[in-house]
Image (cartoon, rainbow, N blue to C red):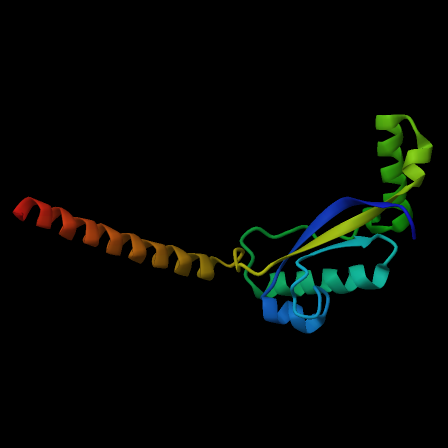
Amino acid sequence: MSGALVVMRVIVVHCESERAALTGLFGCGGDVRVQSIDIGENDRISALMELAESCEKSGSARVPQDFGRDGIWAAEAMQKKLRDCIAAEYYDQDVAALMRPAVMFRLCAQDCNNPEAERQRIEKEERQIAKLNERNRVRAAKLHVG
């Protein structure tokens, strides 16, 4: 389909790079971290939604996303919403006809939605800060002695 894709919804897929790569949904090696999918591509959207949901369930999400597949997911409903928004802003149905609604899926392999991983990151940072503080204390003591 021709026309410009307009992102109407963003889903963050909290998933390990290796797991994402195995699905092929984010490129062959999981290296295409952002996918903007035309709302008419139901199979791809469903596959990405299933991955997002399963990764979030297995990752102890601290801030769960709303994966609700309400009426907004119907291609016609999303196209109508886009048309209405464009018509209200630009008063031009011709412009709206050139645009297609899309869903953006963004791969986040940072493990940022996992409380245990966050705790480990914080502990590592605290250890690094403690080392720097100790080095600075030793340097300051040497300056006072010399």
